[in-house]
Image (cartoon, rainbow, N blue to C red):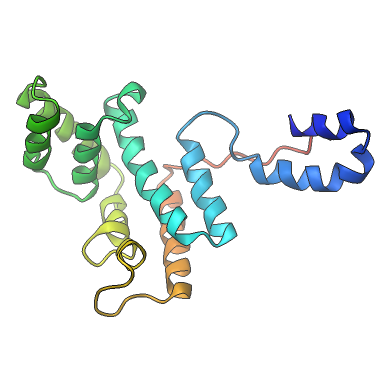
Length: 189
């Protein structure tokens, strides 16, 4: 662990304040879970890394739905990620997912896709406002486009507005209780 660095080097007294700060910064990344994705969003906001924060938020929400409905072992499955995006966008129609399934996983029955998609859609609906918040991020007028498409649209947001939008959106997501931040642990050194 980082605290061992100070003890091993003989510089513990001098490094203690620095190591304490490092431990506090990495404390939210306490396990191998999707909560780390949400912790990364907060870290990006704190560091002014807005594009990275937007990407972490989008991908973590998609991963969360795949994990909850399909299982952690399928978190990288392209078809289920497409389904999760559709559900997050508020669509109750699995047709796009079925089309993607035919290209990438033709052996999965359409009925299975419909069933899993419906579960994802219902899960999203169980968090009122989640779909609307996700659309603020990724929809046609979503602020993600201002960064990922270099602001090529009418009335693109300025840098300060993007920071505020991400911060406000993340606060809304946190209010839905999808993210349970872990309390900071006292420094180990």
